Image (cartoon, rainbow, N blue to C red; front, side):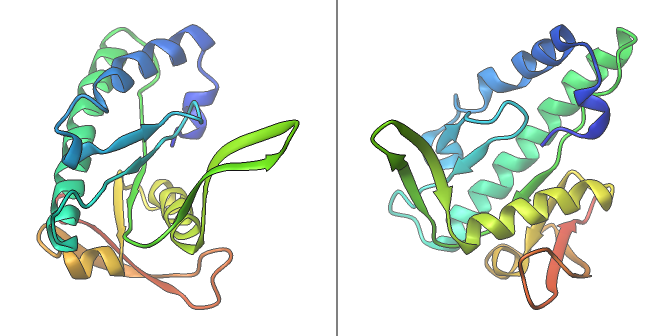
Amino acid sequence: GARHADVHRPLQQQVSALNGVLPWTNQGDPPKLGHVDRRKAQAHLEQVGHHGKDRAAVCRDALAAAHDVRARVRAVAGDSEAAGRSPVRFGLALHVGELLYGNIGGADRLDFTCIGPAVNLAARLEKLAGSLGRTIVASADFAQLCPDGLARIGEHALAGFSASQTVFGLTDE
């Protein structure tokens, strides 16, 4: 998601930054990047489907896609800073779990959304990424399936969860 400084930059600069990132987010190999839900301007949820792979392989693909996103955002950020604009920053959370998605609502208003504890945890982890100064964090469930390149960074109390959650981050951050 976007960080505080990003929402205070002029609207045209925000749009330019998003245009520099979003066009390629769903151009990869579909099993790797999956479907991109652009219902939010400042954040998006990527659903990574199994496509016949085991869960660990899907998690490895998601982690590889996250590294790719980080590299591309860094390139856009460098362009922004070189042009004298505030830097582009983002946070991304990796989690594995079940969710429900689809149109929810009444006859006069439908909203396409995702719901479930897995969505809630991913959203809380995404917010935590910024306060930890990290771009990519992962849940314990994700790290168990894909431990390479991840290190435990601590236990954190997250809104909506009775127990503290073990959070992992990239070893190079």
